[in-house]
Image (cartoon, rainbow, N blue to C red; front, side, top):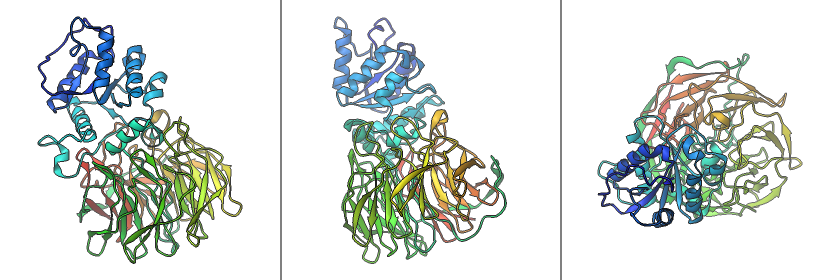
Length: 581
């Protein structure tokens, strides 16, 4: 806050010529760091309103605080234990939200928001800044604000490379808060502009038993190759210290693309669609050809979408459903025809399912379940519907036992396992099974760790790997679990070498599962990679990617895997790289 009790605190230089666009809210005990952040932002040409500097002598302090909030476009909330305890901070944030301002929590201590603050900022994207150097975190903040306000980049700013204004490390507020909590309209628009957009599900089972992959956060299903896993799975086996595999840079996309949806096609090409850039969600799509290692544009979608679900159908076409365009949750769907390189609208869903999962059933239909309906905290839904390619229509089916978004989903013995996710207030450990024969959901065993945004991978032999994601007091998780459809229970298996969320995941031809990049518990965007071996139940580290990236897409290709796009401190990435053993 810039609270009404701080008139005697030391002021600093008023000689700034940049008009204020950002209001800095902080607790009085954090005054020194607040003033330092203000200086750094203004060094990056982001004008700030901060008390007591911007309070004119002889005027009512509280009135000028209100004027400062209303005259600026963004509030930067310095989140700390002192801020949690300050009634003035709460009032300032409440005022900013009521006036439709974008609030960006900037955590200067490793604390959660207090219950009173959580009401206002639990769904907002934020930046962690308690680890030095502070200057680099503030520069990230300045770049994000500049992109949000559509201000021109500074010379040398990461966005000037042509990749656009990305938002790097939005660390550990909890998966539900970054992706599936539903803020105000202003907050949603901010999230889109900041490119920290809902990431959901991309994926798909193919009718040929080949792999299908997802975008950066998995609420998706991945089928395994025919190789069988043998031997017992150990409990909590640690990662191997011997790295394997290597990355090489391959062709670049035509434009930077954060949070792309990636789908392997029957013609061995890789479809990359949607996502976001500095202007928000996009309609464009392109194809990656492994034989030439190059990308080429293909038809554009009818609607701008960031991270819709994308499901490869039996006839080789792709069902693209839902997603989000800025604050608008989409219920529309369309079909991509790879033979003609075109998208065409198909039947519309009964409701939006932004943040839900899409899983292809054995009969060729697609189950779309859960997600967000709109822009309120209670909009997470338990509803589900199926798409029939023969009629090109969606039909409402039974509802889940629990409303959830950001869940993991996988096809198991003809049924769909749906696990974890968040209900708008907390991550979930519960899981359930959908039976397409009678269109009903029933509860099954629960996860050991509540988690949202985790990967879900169907392994050979029928078990399902659920790893990483965010949830509970640990925020970003390194734990992994296996679901056994025979016993209907989850058991812990080896852990990731580093806690990861927003990682790209692809199942390899030898049955291992590659985890690439993402962000760790400190919010650092990662270049590191590792793979899970179903035979040993352990993770082994691989050599890092050439570029650190979060919210990238991945797909198996050419006896390896390709990792596409994503985001880091430089913005949306156009690059792609191929991993091989």
